[in-house]
Length: 538
Ligand SMILES: [Zn+2]
Image (cartoon, rainbow, N blue to C red; front, side):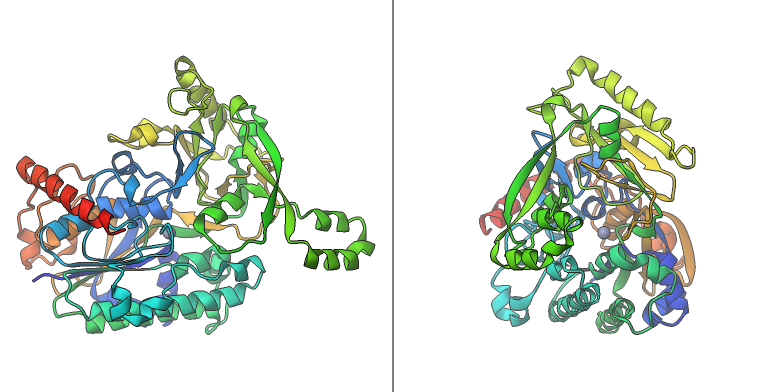
């Protein structure tokens, strides 16, 4: 029976990994590059973790699966919700594998909560609530899962203890690996595990890592070494003939200029903001939601702000801080009754951005009448095209798309209306409530996502030492189905990466089987029944 193992390294890019491999820091990866096929893997636009992994899982562009970012507005631009598997329109390849009696084990795949299959699913940071182990009784069988964490201790990061935070990430990933090892010993046909730590660490340190400024055995570098070691364990413990695929959902880059999209929309009178003070207890338990809300909040620590002028207050402040359970925070939000357009999703800090028009037809509290929609969209696009960096006088927008020019499929209705790409050195940030659209000053943590991630494939049937091109994240689903000899639905956007197979192998000549309509209908019915069963358990 054909077995496939996919290892994800969130945010990995060859720009860094290749040089680390050549320097001898990643010996397993180096060996696999020499004995397998590798190349860049194009993500989706914008290159966001959740929507990219969903394109991996469905083999489709966001226009078909309907997930465009980490979070998306629902009935109002002020109601932005985190994406879960319930938002995925259509079928994932692992549901098809499951339907074809292939045993699947999936660990940490974004967009896999709530689980869509009856196999073993350990969900990702998008989990809503505490339960991320499915079936839940797995915790009794594998006690290690009692201490399983999906996110690191973010309070360390908030306190500025970055190295401790990285150490905590290393600990988390080692524990994830220990749990994965236990599951790897079970019976499976398809095994997926994602290591997220590389993305988390790169958000803080990619600039230093790429310049080789960190010591060889410092915590961030150790994380890469350890992941290489985990890959080595999987390779040596995989059943004979297993196909190994290593991918990332997007690449990484260090940007040196910042563009605040909402600040620009505000300056151009497309967006109005309102500010409200908010009482809040100390940060408490981290959740993805609270983190995202924080991004849109100016954290005015009121007493600290005063301290700038009244240093003599310091001792009093320190005393007060201890007894006061609250901090004064200001919530900045779009004033929807006067807002025409808004970049609602949490931007991924890449050179891509998106804008939603406050469309009356689409949003309950929308402002733009349907007859004005096109006019407004054209106007914003025109102004974006002419946008110049005031310091250099250069046009910074390389491309602007209407949603229907970039995406295609049945779920265009929920897409952002405008998507744009900045020139390589500029990073897009939300910037709600920030006075100037351009942050040309040296900004800390300007590391962010980039379009090209990594692809690597290795098995005795796969070519050796070949660098390949033109692979896209949505090519994985049809390729995996093909390797596992399961008929491929005709509506996938990706292609089978046939060029990776050795010419003398059966896979290079096998006919690609597509699902016929009958099979598709049968699958739908089966999945509905299975889906109901799975959801009942939650
Ligand atoms: Zn990612």
